[in-house]
Image (cartoon, rainbow, N blue to C red; front, side, top):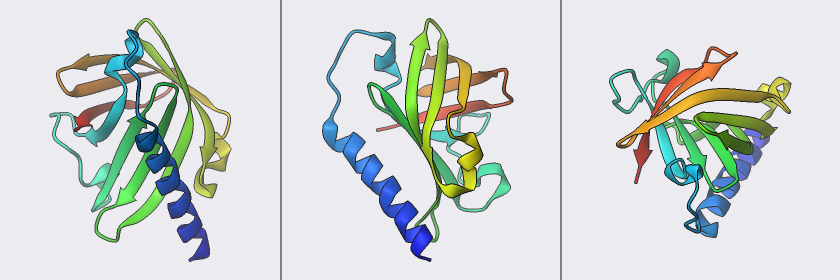
Length: 141
């Protein structure tokens, strides 16, 4: 139980830090990515049963130089998984480098994942390059 509480406190602290720091407007390709995104299904509808797990949702929070990915159980108000890292953009390729994670995913520490991405209206579509992750995210305002 202490482990879950510590992980929850860490994830909430990271999220609050990102939100409280604010974002300065700089003309760069990152501008459209900056914000909070919630994972969607193929139809662009917010996904509330992530990977078939009832009440599981996923958020990706992107600041000017870091990203945070958080899996939550909305019914029990629990943080299930979290990742924090840096990212880069080169034209239409978004690359994440995982710097921190909870103990469930220690094997991913230091890993890098690249995606072709596009943004249309409030939807972010990413297509894995050398990895199987193809996802759609809806911007949360």
